[in-house]
Image (cartoon, rainbow, N blue to C red):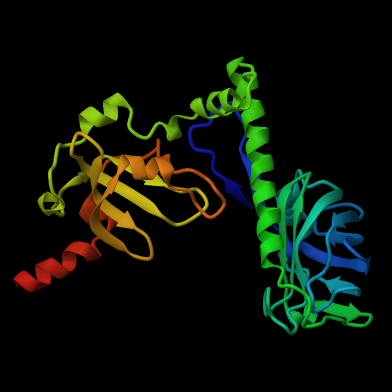
Length: 305
């Protein structure tokens, strides 16, 4: 399963499971959405005894809403393999529906069957299936006046990530022997101040960065001393120089990578799609700019030749 990597969290704090991908272990199941905003049913998985009971808030996607679906697994994995993967997965699943679709018109969520929910017991759970693995029983009903469900899905995901953050901060307090501050503002500062990744430019790093005045001084052999990133998107920044005030020089990765400049104040204000702040990669080891993005320097070599 995928894991949410918590940069800067003390080692004694266990890692939070982020995504359980269970489609390949599915044996059989049945989910029902005949009551509005309620999904109930059961699932069987390789390596687990008995049924997993499902009780979720929310509804199926518009292509199968108000119906009953029967799921059949292909049995690719033996019980021994399933038991190893499914260890720790709870037999009762409660939480919120993220997306349950058979991959039928109007194709807003997926063209393939997908069962996904945010579990209070195990985090994010996902079953990706083939069309032959799902049977829809009951009348399919959806109308054009139904609103698109993406905003609701984003709200569910945001709530889920915030719940994880709260659980992690509670464990941080327990590990560090600290108590939350009284006021809301003081509480926020106290909670996040224990994360080294949010200290974007500590004194040791500032002394390590070469002083530059222009990005034109960057070469393939320039060393990136630090990497910044947003946990909820693909954006990243590598700094190989600093002007001593507010401007870094290095590689910026957005829709593509390029040599450029970015500011410390800008990084502090930057937020990802889910509202997460920019973090410093505390596990980053120094590498050359050519190692990070060789394509940026290959073109220049071709021009010279």
